[in-house]
Length: 208
Length: 244
Image (tube, each protein chain N blue to C red):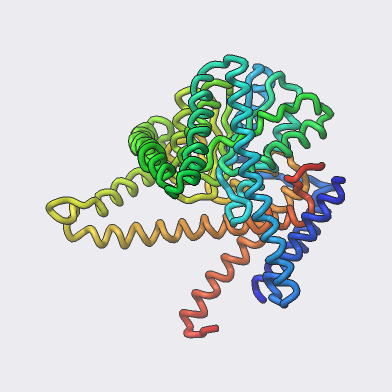
């Protein structure tokens, strides 16, 4: 079974890769078909994932684990969201109930997490020098603060006056160069990770 | 044609170096975060505490999937190493396919260690499908599940800061790395030992995932030198007015 799954994974990967480089009609058709199958499997995976989420929280509730009350809330919210969709379809009002759920609950909750995130980032920056005091840390903080000053909108115009453009140009040059370097490294890592999976050296789909 | 050449050349190099590395393992440079990871894995087994591995939201149908695959390779090795622990590691992810693969990897890891009975299906969890719901679902794991070390590896966005903050508040060890530039800058400011750029893809080699991972690092080094030569050469040719 392990050999079969590895063979299917490797063959599918090779077909998609070769189809990408040589867009022959037959290969392209095969590539599109394989990708379509993968998309269907991914959609099913969402259902399995949601079921897993429910089982994990039901298990917590059953064992009366710490903070299992949040699990009750999660399952009730999930059921309410499904009900909103089904009732909306039944009453033929389209996405009205779903839109209410998204606009009144999901978006505000995520926005509040975003605001917590902003505070967390400021707090992390303040603690950074206490955690690590080296040249790179000082440069990192200095550049972050200068960038913030340079892009910050104020009622009086640019905070750093005529220096604004120079700072953005100079620091931007270095940071863009650094970012490209990081992205090249990540691209090389991505290539080699893909090849390992293609050769069956890494088998995240099970097997040894 | 150049792209195909790079892929084929890399594949041949990977196969050759993997074969060579079977006989003589690679000597790796010291990366503080991975050294600490190896220490905390041992400590978690001794303490009877858990590892929490957060694999991020890397969708396998996008280029971000590679970081998820690197995380899975690391997970596989860590599962084997912690298989004798009373508390199995918990894996959280923000992508449904990734969550299924994490369960499969956990099972394969226990099976390879001869401890199939240790596997629990609810240790591989999908905690949310949007960035913030994923973070909100993952934070309670850090807080409530007797976790002593958090390994945050994969594709994250700004929400990584919330995970790092939660780990910090619980005073647990944290090893964090991402392929996303925003997350990298956030992790640089928040994590104890930040890992940068392609160090994400070195994780397998540093936890002893096998010769193919060592070989990958060496091929990456070769390709990196080729890129440097191409960039410098391109600049010199441009300076001389030679265009391709």
